[in-house]
Length: 272
Image 1 (cartoon, rainbow, N blue to C red):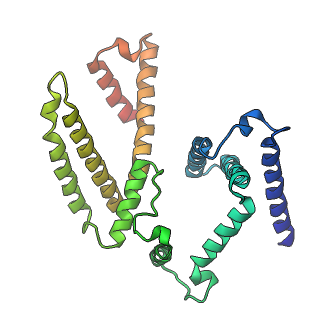
Image 2 (cartoon, rainbow, N blue to C red; image 1 turned 90 degrees about the horizontal axis):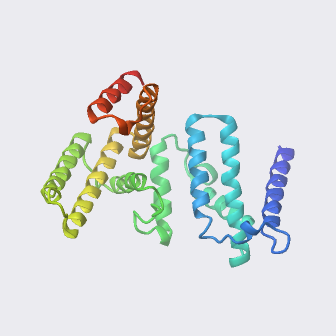
C-alpha cells in the first residue's frame, strides 16, 4: 500500500512539475503562459464533457485518457492560482480531503453507519447548509451548469424542502399549463414582424416550459439533460441516414422536397 501511495504522490508531483515548466516565463510554452483563470474555463468544460462521454461508454482506454486531461486542467488551475493568490495544488488537495472527511461523519466520524443512500444525501445537504456560502438552499447549484441539468438540480433541491409536486402526472399537467401560456403568444408570430415585447414574453414562457419538462424528467427518474443528449444522438443518426440514402441517388437534402425528407426520416426511425 505504501508503495502505491508513493507512486501516486510521485506521479502528482511530476505532473505539477510539467505544468510549472509549461508556465515558466522564460522556458515555457508561449500559449500556456498567456492563459488566465478565465481563459481556461472553456478547456475545463470541454475536457469534462469528453470524460463524461467516456464514462457513459464505459471505455477504459478513453476514461484513462480523458480523466488525465481533466486532471491536467485542475493542476493547471492550481499553478495559476499559486502565482496569483498564493495557494496551489497542495492546498486544493488538503481542502477537498478535509471537506470529504467532514461531510462523511458516518464514515470518518462518530456518526452511525448509514445504509440508505438518500439519507446520506440528505445529511450531505444539511452539512453543506451550515456553511455560510450555502446558507440558501439553492445557492449550492452552480450557475455554470448546463441549463437543463441546473433545472434538474434546482427542482431536486427545492423538492427536498417539500416544494414539489406529488407525482409525475401533476407535473405533466403543469407542462400543459405552461404550454398554454406559450400558445397564447403564437398569434404574435403570424405577423411579418414580431414585436420585441412578444418575443421576450415568448422567451420567458419557453423557459417555464423547459423548467417544467426538466422537473417532469426528474419525477420520471432520469435527467432531462441525458434525455436530450440521447435524442440529439438519435437525430444525428437518422439525419445521417437521410444524407446517405440521398447520396446514393446523387442528391443532397436540399435537393428534394419536404415529403421525400419525411419519408426517409420515418424510414430511419424504423431502421435505427
